Image 1 (tube, rainbow, N blue to C red):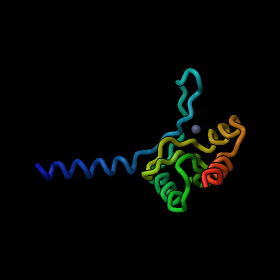
Image 2 (cartoon, rainbow, N blue to C red):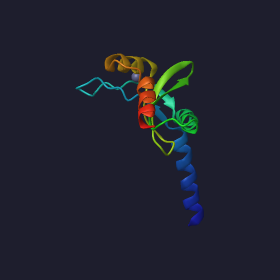
Image 3 (cartoon, helix red, strand yellow):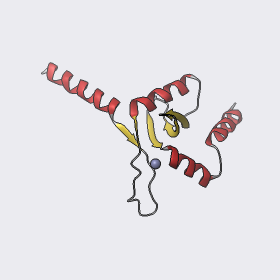
Length: 112
Ligand SMILES: [Zn+2]
């Protein structure tokens, strides 16, 4: 009984670590065109934990993947919710008209 349960836990851990995160971009409002770009969840989580260790606030952060800059949203526990591929990161930032890095910096300064 207990050995079966342990085996199931191990399988789940591997699945979570290797599960690729897909770019969350969609073509609004139809919401039926998903971007196919994917990134290793383990890679993103590793990048986010380094950001957390440096004192980054929860929220959007940039990370490099195969020489290109992606955007992801980091949670306090070290998990990552949602990624944008380099193409859609640039498109998003252009649409919003700001650099999230600057906004985060401003938020930190405001809070302290
Ligand atoms: Zn994309």
